[in-house]
Length: 227
Image (cartoon, rainbow, N blue to C red; front, side, top):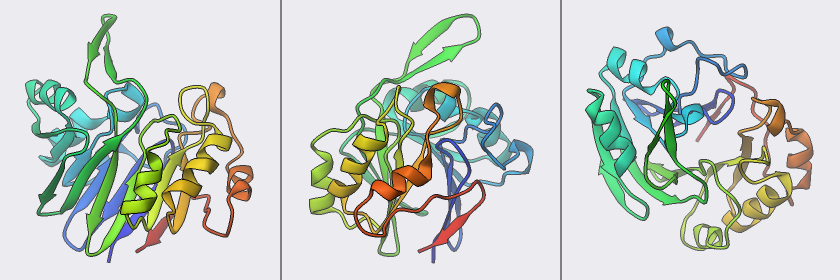
């Protein structure tokens, strides 16, 4: 059994029988989260792209937990230079790990890491994540625009739970995310990447009401779903 919890912005935690996996652990500076970096025990960190509100506290978390970091190649390389244990991947590629199978999907967005001395480090292409374990599939779309190949996810994947950004401005807004939800055919769709900053303020309940059927769910920080 998998337990999947949402923790504000784009932070998603997956607990399997033996492993704890966190996606895009932006905790410090995230007013929407219920997590504390020093209390978080993780085995694996999955990253969609290099923006600071997604890489977040990866370096500290990985070091304090001796966690594996799985990320697109350039981002993984950069974090490897920072002394982390990394596994580089890229879009379209999948890999079977001990903790589950990870496949990276397309995401139409940017990917770079801002260092404190006003340096922008290019971190390759942004991605979404398909995580599979024990016959269940979780899709974390990362930061993305709506794009027509999302239809392929609906055609070839059997997605149990999907996290889609709805914030607008930097990613899909609610209208486009509702189209994405229809295309990917996930059994449950959860909105993410909203209300963290004024420019991405949205009403998640309104988004869920746009969805055809009863497959939308607003998750509060700390709430979980069992798959």
